[in-house]
Length: 443
Ligand code: UGA
Image 1 (tube, helix red, strand yellow):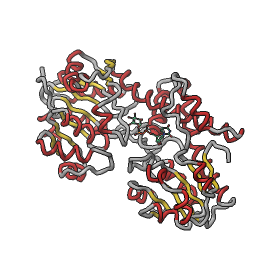
Image 2 (tube, protein in one colour):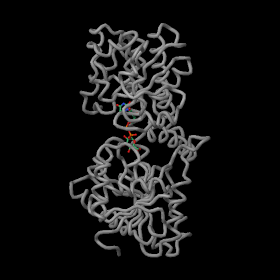
Image 3 (cartoon, helix red, strand yellow):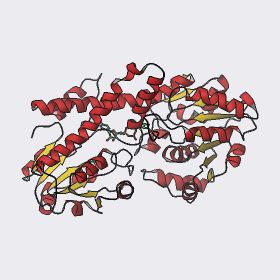
Image 4 (cartoon, protein in one colour):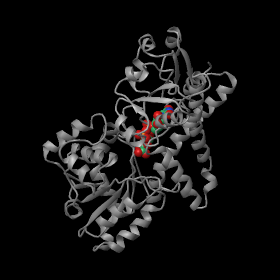
């Protein structure tokens, strides 16, 4: 059996993997991060996190200095080094369908399986369609020179962008999907410091572990779309969705988290995960059970359209030639991630209707520019709002919430604002002479 303190490799050092590698080193393990992307490996090895994540940069430098953390592009080295190999590669939405693209996952498991020649554990962390782990188990056995002495486990990850380090070191729970007691023992050894904090652990079979992840993300997406569906009803009745959410949240059975109405969910996880889950359920013959996820997705998309409607309304019914300040591009604050970002999608739609859209995001401008080069990007809030006909708040960065309505009012062409994230004090804005609108709230 493997030593008390297994050596760890992390394959795929994108968002999840880089965080996991750094945090495992912080827990005292020797860690090797592996990626086929030479640039990423070079950046991390030089102590630079190639994306924005609060706290990660400092921890990376600290861990490199201990000598416990290194990065490589060589799978041979990884196979020799590790006792427990975490696979953290991406599972993006496949180009032409709702299904997840498993090419990176398959490649990573194949690359390890064909090279590892002593007892070891392969642990999937990526979000995958149910049944993937069992399929990979068969594949790994076929490819491995040591047959079933190379085992496979699934250990879903629940970290949030913006809180990645905190969520990894202090998770709400751990889930181990295992097929043997030996595999469970290895995972318990890796997570011993976290389990010692009293973190709840669920030990499950492989398909359950895979399902936990998509079920959790689907629940969160559903909760957001639920309150956003109520916002639609509010708009038709003159009711106020913020007051509604506040009242609902006092019921402990409902709870207030993920009940914030607004432009809805985006990012690299929730949207693609609910689509891939619905798609997989259909393949499994239980599509009906999660057919509601299509509605969750539709409600989410409709918020973006409604946001465009409100901006158009404030612009006087026509966006052609209007100057619109788009505040935010990232899919949420404290992130530079613009994958499936509601903010950027709204900015794009406004621009398609002929508006001159000026975008400012404190961290995501560069990524946004790469995704939509046609929009105008500026480096400050002041520049963005200068001479604006309508201001559209699309991502609730703290900077926007703290802005002074009077000072902003001095800069804009007209004092009109749509709060797409329920992040602003409506009374303060109205008090300063702004025409103020918010999704799901009375005019
Ligand atoms: C999400 C999950 O929260 C994590 O648990 C999970 O590990 C991760 O996906 C993943 O699968 O990797 P993340 O995508 O980082 O994390 O972001 P969230 O904080 O969940 O926010 C998702 C979206 O929902 C954002 O666009 C946010 O603006 C929106 N949202 C969130 C709302 O519109 N209302 C809310 O009340 C909460």
